[in-house]
Image 1 (cartoon, rainbow, N blue to C red):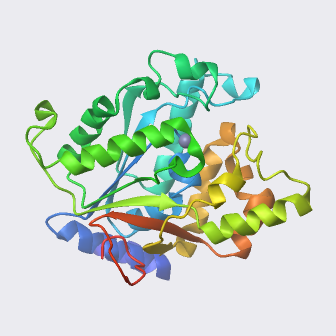
Image 2: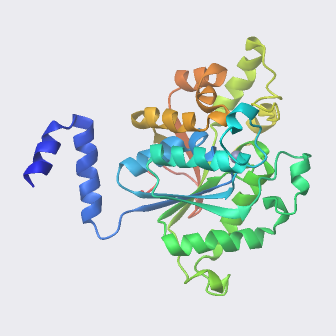
Image 3: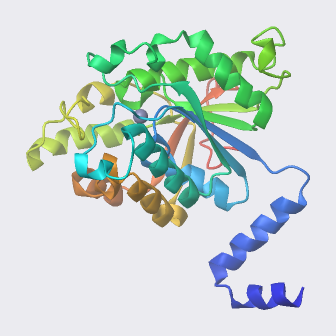
Length: 308
Ligand SMILES: [Zn+2]
């Protein structure tokens, strides 16, 4: 006890606050549980990393189910030194990011990265998109029933930027969420359980629209954005998803940066620098969510906490 008090005394104010939050959560019978279901190593850091770190820091049990190991990612050959495959490298990067974000567990589904539309990877028999949505949902529901999350997060209906794997795992997660309390749905995947809420991570439309207008000024084509020049920002910006929750992640910016840096083979901190990084810093750090379940009808008050 004396050692604990001495250690506590030596902590900074923020660390003291975190330690108290953690102790309160540990004393509670059950910690709040958050499960995010995504497609590739790096989706958890580049997209919603702030939210995951924010809740992990508050003492919630945060889990990630990742559908693939990112086999189709473009990786410079020198980065592969010491690794048997791209999958092995990206899995290692994900475990690094998971540690930074404070995740309690990371689980992979048995699928291969499907690559961007039209690529050779689409045709691989083990590509996630070649498994039925129902089959993938059978894997997802197993984790929902085992981990018993209060809330489930996944991509929006266009998978953020229309990546086929993102859209496929979105559809599978929605199906799994809708039927997780139905004993007849994949009965071998555990006992029925119903999480309270389902959210889709969305990119703020106004932000995308501003980016589309500013990019040509900086000599960039908004229809050919990203490391592989395969993201059409223009077509994404016109999609309209409501924002029901905005999570302030300023307190965990450094953690999100550190987790992003773990994914060095996919651009790492480069994704948080450059033109897009400048936009992000200029317009503040918030992560947006659409609440899919329970459905939001009519007027609503913008949430600042996914658990409220
Ligand atoms: Zn992805």
